[in-house]
Image 1 (cartoon, rainbow, N blue to C red):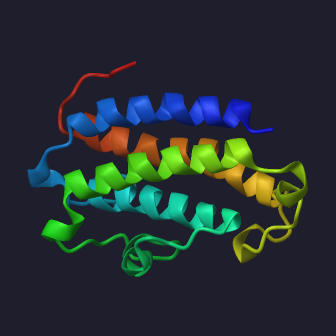
Image 2: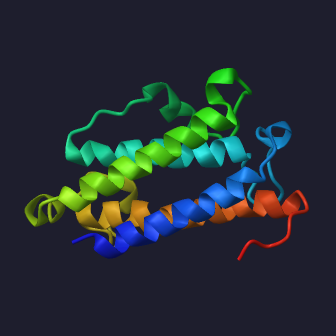
Image 3: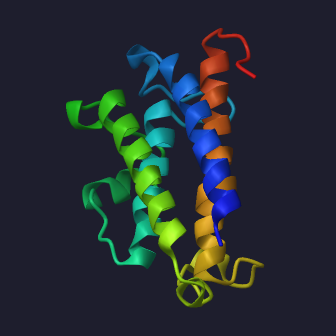
Length: 161
């Protein structure tokens, strides 16, 4: 059911790794021009979003303390700390999306056809749990990786693709 979304997310994660490799620790907590998010927030937001998606598969959020910092509606400001360093957040993002892809690959059509519980998507074409998982694996991930890419480009790096 999710083969295409899984393939797209795997591809995007490889792109993420290339982009993130050029993000310096010194600028990790600095807001970027344009969208105003620091790389720390973008990576943390994606990591917690994957954890939120895994709740549909019965898995609890592993980092509940991250929700107020990186979750929907958060300010986008991240206070520098060792527990939110690039290595920790990047590792969590990659592991969380690997886990989300695995859960999606095992998902039953019946479970994924159930209505989602996300108020933000009420009244939109995003109707089911499956729609939400597909969105997390593709559009949402790609949108925020594009923001991270703009941070990289603002630091003077040439395009990767």
